[in-house]
Length: 79
Image (cartoon, rainbow, N blue to C red; front, side, top):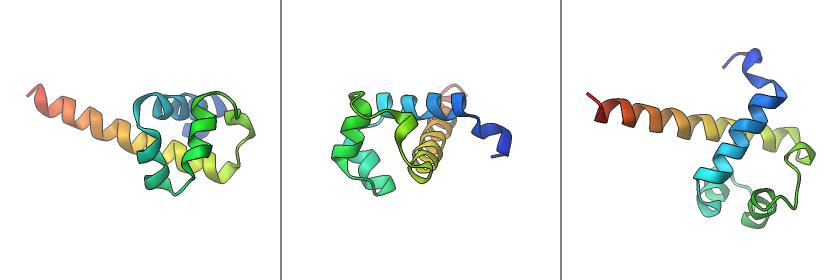
């Protein structure tokens, strides 16, 4: 990733995608954040813009990893 990939809008989009497409349990286990915190984010009770920079980076990184894995699997199934 380059620094350009880390603008706020892109981070927000990646975190929202993750919260919509991966279970709270899996997110909490994979990045080591509590499930209640993931639940608050998913339900909009905690704003993504108010989380720590470190957590935002971890969520974004995990989101991109999952998305690229899914893209690879889709590409393989289309061959």
